[in-house]
Image (cartoon, rainbow over all chains, first blue to last red; front, side, top):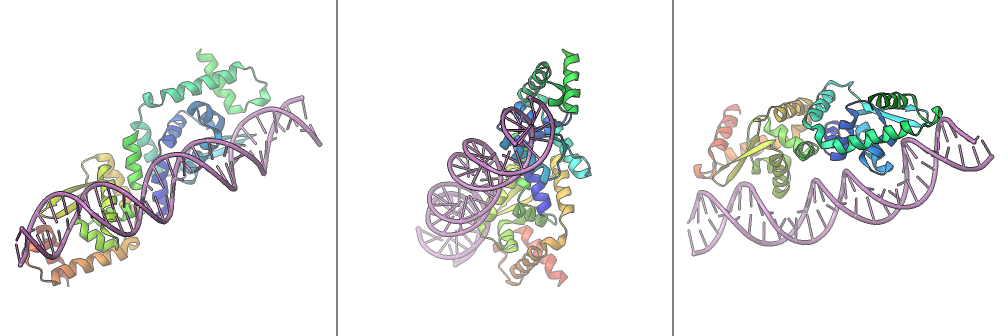
Length: 132
Length: 132
DNA sequence: ATAACATATAAAAATATTTTTATATATTAT
DNA sequence: ATAATATATAAAAATATTTTTATATGTTAT
């Protein structure tokens, strides 16, 4: 029964639902969450870890960055996540989204040297640049 | 988001999953849970209340007894409950079931006067009596 | 090598949940 | 009316989770 309870426990926290909602449109690294949710980094890492232990997200290391994304390898969890995402209107995380976009834009505008930005971040930055 | 988190919070506790599993085969009153799970009554009432607030169970008063049953009026919750029930093998609550059956049998054998047993309890007792 | 950075982890503090114990309320029996 | 029973609720104690603060680890830049 432990697997079930820890799965639901992972989903029973607002901060973690905000994380899943942010991941809806693609993977993010820890510092993106920190900026988007305006939280200190260990707090974000703590929640990412809860989600990871429940197999709701997976991580991938890219240089010194750690990227998190939704783990949809299990049907039931996948269904749960979809149900959750569709029940949280975008409106509810608009502040997070706004801060995230600003952060990504700032990253892009900072004209940081190539080696300070990982590949997937650069892709997102370019995407943002072409929009504005 | 509160409705979602309190729904998952309600499902994130082993005691409450045991309650749902016991309710799989029909409604029960508080004293049935107390006997089945071998717990003090306020503890059972506390968990029933959490489930009720999350609209996972509903209650019905019958004389001095309070009967609880699964609330399947909402599709999503219904699906969640079914998913949970099918993921908990009967084996895992066999002790609860055993104590419940013994309690119901004892109720029946006690030859309690009619007015001490509510209608739905009597139905279950008769059912048990005919089995043994 | 040293510094800067991203992230993880540990320990302490703050907060929330659960459990227990005691008591209140409502219903039915005597 | 009074006693007995079923359940609810409140307060205190126990436990678990979350947040913060400080520090460790690993990676890349200088």
